[in-house]
Length: 253
Image 1: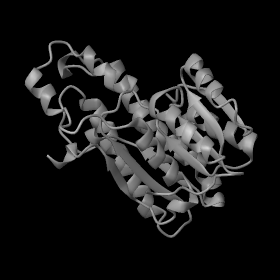
Image 2: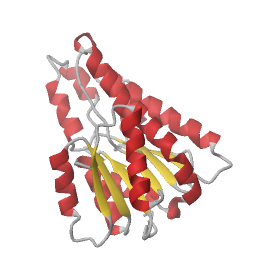
Image 3: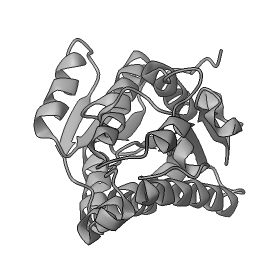
């Protein structure tokens, strides 16, 4: 098993921290003594996450932000630098999913998916890079098994996750000779609000939905969170440009 190193006196940004994988990652990083900036659009959910970490004596800040624009993303990084003075890891977990038949998909849903799932990680990374290079830090981008498969009803989501995977690889190559690491964790289906959203598809083809079901069952959120946290730590110094699939083998075909 991968053993993460301590993150004591190090600061980490976790987006999508209001629940699901983001919350589980925040909990995993707290166990490693990291100082955290937790970001989410849902103020109540974010407050709940912070309350779960209340017993910790670490510095934990929250920021309600929707990450829908460049200025919003830059504000996250500026706030982290103001609070911590530096950034050691950026975990891009926030995402949106609007399952639908392509004929029913709205332009607003398309633009929102692009903005949150692909543009936001880019702008967050762009703004954070000077601080991450100074700290010899890490970027962990969470994508999905949908980045590697043709899956019905989630074309926009799949496209953004594939794009984020390739963006990560490109940045890893660009920074090959510099001290910042870029990696991807690509989970399969987990018991999160994103997975539950699949129930909203209008008149889906049961045969097609069946092709999306992993034969070995759902992925454990905590296992994915452990991997994201590990990649954020100095213990993962040899991981650069990696795409780690945690998907119960669904991408095997």
